[in-house]
Amino acid sequence: MAELDESITRWLTQQVGTWRVQQRIWSSATTEPVVLPPMVAERRMVHDVFLEESMQPAAGSGQEPFTRIAYVSFNPVNRRFEHVSLDSRYPPIMFETSVDDQLDRDDTIVLFVSGFTTPAGFGEIPAGQWASQRRLLIAESTDHTICRQYWTFPWSAPFLAMEYDYTRQ
Image 1: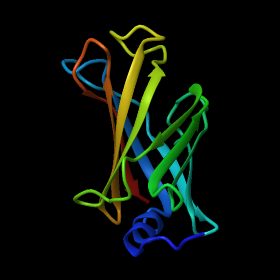
Image 2: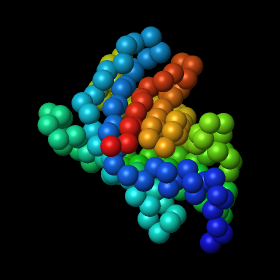
Image 3: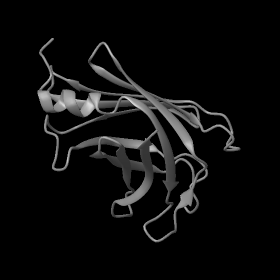
Image 4: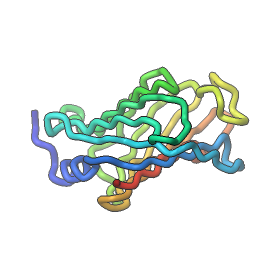
């Protein structure tokens, strides 16, 4: 396997650690966000290639138990970033890829999924609606990362639908 570019390796390895996570969700471009109870994410490198994340509710948050597992890596064969997530709150496996091999400005990875169906519980959006997604993984600093998901429906412009705000513990 080809070696990873130094900037990619740096981006992935700086994410290792324990993170406090605050999630917000929007059901449209005009609604106020719903703030979910706090969560905790553990991130580690697997074989110096994959960044693995395991997320659960924070202790004492009162949130229903769930598990979210995600992997981020760079595939040297197709020269793209890849992101896979499995979330017990939303059972389908989400698989996303970047368009190219570049970290965008400000240490951002941009990923896309061409289509998925929306889960229940998103306010104005009925469950089962077809949408596409653009995900931004933004390393604000070594102690602060933001994940933003922009959804686009056949009838709408892209809007911020979900945000995970990570702060290193």
